[in-house]
Image 1 (spheres, helix red, strand yellow):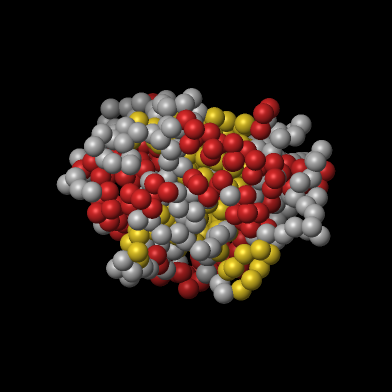
Image 2: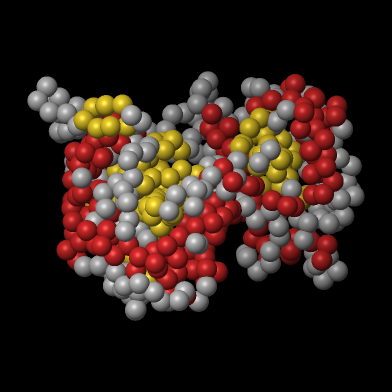
Length: 519
């Protein structure tokens, strides 16, 4: 079997500035999103791009426009006619945009029906929030449609409807998404867009406050922290009847990580061996190759879910056949649609004996939207040279999917993970399996206590443990790590292991891409 071309499974997802070349696609999407409403003219888009190009954005998936957002800046006045979309937006031309204003006003946000369910609206709202922080704007205001209201208009007033939606008693495809993204309901506007029959002409007046706003400041308020939220999964192995049942269990954890707005979620090493419970039993070497037949399903599932749940997924690891050679590979599914992979470099005696796994040859470092990260699969974290190489390439977070059968094996992983934090001044997150798989040889019992670990110094968590699961129960831990704190620690920590290496006495030498290198 030839190596799989990962580009076939990537969703090339790009948030970028809007261009006039997008006009036809925008109109097509607008007509599908708002049937019966007059779409933008070319003059509208040209004017928006000329007046405030930074405020006009699109999300592109595999070259297709999947979502868009438009906005302008105004000066907040309590008595301003927020109820009048045409007045505030200059009828869509935004020539009243005020670069010195203090409020970002959203004039439109739409998601193509074919791409709904992928939380693209959240990405656009997050981009608007970042624009507020970058430009030191006090707030964002939007007039939101309530397209679900027409179904209830005969039985309740618009006020009653929005109150029920805010109270989670009803679902509205727009208002529910907006309140979930941090907007507070400030009022209800009648005759906002009379042509909006689904909303019966009504709209909500919603506000998001920028907590970083500094009155009078001329530039962005800089964060004192750079928090990255990590969810690590302690996954219970149990028999399943199909890949769909396995996927359903993964969906639960992905949804939780998304609800908590995690940047990364980490699954365990070889948790896909759970799938061996739904295939014909055979000797371990053949079973591992049988498991590799699920690779395409595995890639399709996690690549799509990384986009849908807007989270970078370390998809544990999985057996993959390449040119009739079996590897243990961990994949990183980026929420931008990219896919990267890390081969396990050190193969345990049992992996060789039972499954015939071959080792990889290179330490990969992945450039994500949250910084550079590396993956070290279980046994690999027990070899300090690999983390040295990864840290030298810029990795600040090391993700360790592991799979151990006894407490001794788990302790080797945990102890070495904490050592790597101290030696290289990085964060390490581990994710392991618990539970049992009866009659699946070499994957029948599991022991785990997953966690997130830090360097050991005054500014970090006590004992260098940021968060840790209870042992041997299916659960997760969620924790924010601070990359700015990590950088300061490297420069000003009580000890500075990375800077104080005696490279005049010792170095790590390795081969990569046919060249001799050293750290």
